[in-house]
Image (cartoon, rainbow, N blue to C red; front, side, top):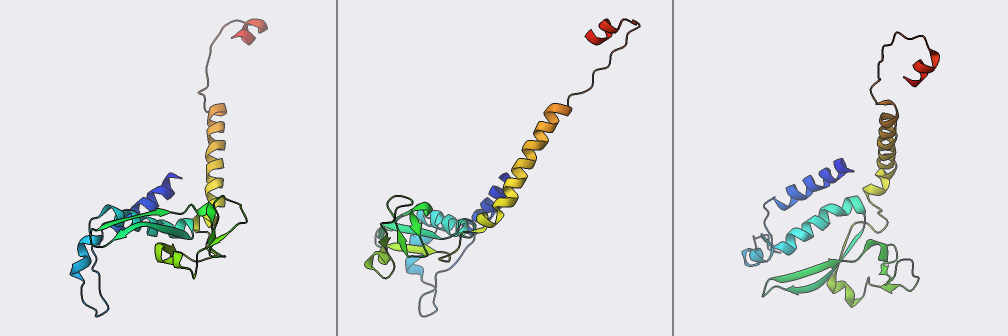
Length: 167
């Protein structure tokens, strides 16, 4: 749905374009880590994932690289179809029952969980309306194809019924 995509994109733009400060434990602005976050590609990708979370539901990010000294940070999103957030586990193949549990393990040092454990996202709630809208557009398109053709008007002075039918 293009309207819905526009709403998500507007949220992303406003979130990534907002200026912010990083505050340390002493309630002071932490200028020493500023260059790690400000105007970096990885942090913009991270903000996009944060803004998508309410729409798609629970999100699990896996840090690939995190080195504050070099400023190199990289992460991947674990595919949602492979994650069972209610169990705190993921599977290698969707639908598999061999879970790899990640909560309360050393793996959590490299994982970032966003969203509630049982949250399926706003898209799940909006699916009925979006599908109804899509079907309505298809039906209206079909109606337009059938009945939207302009009428053709013909004038004749013949009284021959076969000629009129051909016309």
